[in-house]
Length: 319
Length: 319
View 1 (cartoon, one colour):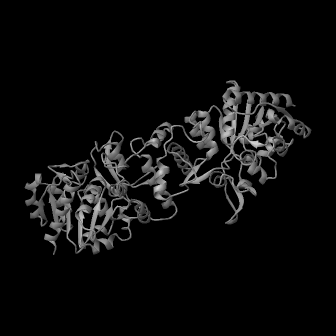
View 2 (view 1 turned 180 degrees about the vertical axis):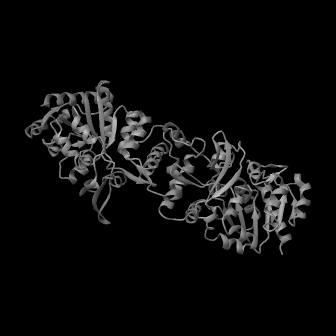
View 3 (view 1 turned 180 degrees about the horizontal axis):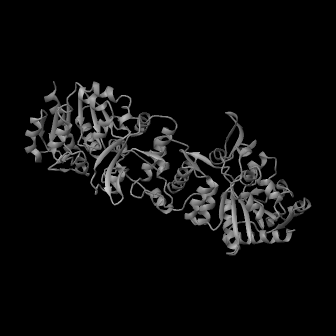
């Protein structure tokens, strides 16, 4: 079976680990990774979501924090502080830096982000084919208003520095309008047997991927059933601050509102947590098959069970 | 007193530490640092000699090895090996990487190497004014003949990877012909009260600096006495493999041959080690005042004594 999953960072990566445990060796998983939260730091190209997927599936992730490397050292961060060179609020460990150095050097040499990602995965062997959503630069900016006035800041500044403490007024995928899907992305979607939306952030992860012209259309047109898993449980994000960016796009932070925002033109099935059983009817009323199952990714087996539920729902809605 | 010193890496840096201990707070030291052994690695500009001077005088040097940082970690090096990205033979620690990241980012932003060096020294406070010999790229290459034929390789490859085990046939300062002295270099030489050649490598350190058009001429024309210290003791380099590159320029690895190679047009005084007392006459016969004093930089005080001897000789030869 050919499975395509759109994925953001921590939530997406953990779901994919469960998915890998749920499927067989004959199944092929293509992951379309969000690059909207990429950022240039210290002259290097940093791809937090691609790396989180790669490290998580490749066994190099820091399990506790969900991002960054295991056995990490922080010498460069300490030195940057001594040099007075920021930003201090973004945590890049030394091992992580090596990835960004290799990536940046390859990009400067003329390789595309797809090619670089493939090269990095030769080491990490994530067990999936990891594709960036686009080889073109797309950068999610967030419009806020604070004492400095109304302005758009990089998503990472909003998320990591400000901890989404200020209201997000708009989410702007800068560059998305002219970006092209990376090689293989549209083909993978068209040829997929199942398409999954993991419980990633619907706005700044899945939403950024869908903002690349052609991808939303390809998912909507794909013959494969499309099934999503709610990142919202009991009216709150399981982790992260998805509610803050959902508000920016006028979507309530509820399991059913997120499903309805994707809409039946895009998704065929939706999984909500058992805590949100009451919202099943509203989702189904919108023409989206919906089931309530446990959606807490407490461990790999619990996550695999979620993946199995998603694949089972896909079979039920397959036309 | 305004002192100008030309300096390479380890030997130069250690001498400068002794010089700082020997002079008073009213004395101003300008160091013209060799950049001929600069190398681009992982997309970053690495300046080994400038950094060795900066770290040594700023208290950040790894004392045992003489280069690199104290309390260093090696995570990036380990990661690069996992990624299969070389060169493995060049040792860049994580703290050291931070310097190269800051430098490279500033250079990309349009600052000159002089400006970058000054900015880095804001942190390190080396107690001297550290100027690169040139803001232009000069790269020392070494011509060798081995099983791959005759070819020119980067000095660092010759020195660090091959350990100078192959004969050097020629030393080629690539780019030197069109390089300009960095801002302040010629002025410092012209206005100096004393000019010193520390016991740095006469070919690939002092020689590279003198290869920048205008610098040799400025030293020769300077009103200040020019005094050098022999890096060769008892017919062998105190450290490093200076004999290998001396052979490439047809100079014997002896204390007097090095002095004669500089020549009386360039230097007015020369210090040899007491072990080389026999060579004093030959140097003096060439019109260069020469004294034999202990030249082993065993500790800062012994090195300060060498600096005092050099300054004393400068007074004796002052016209």
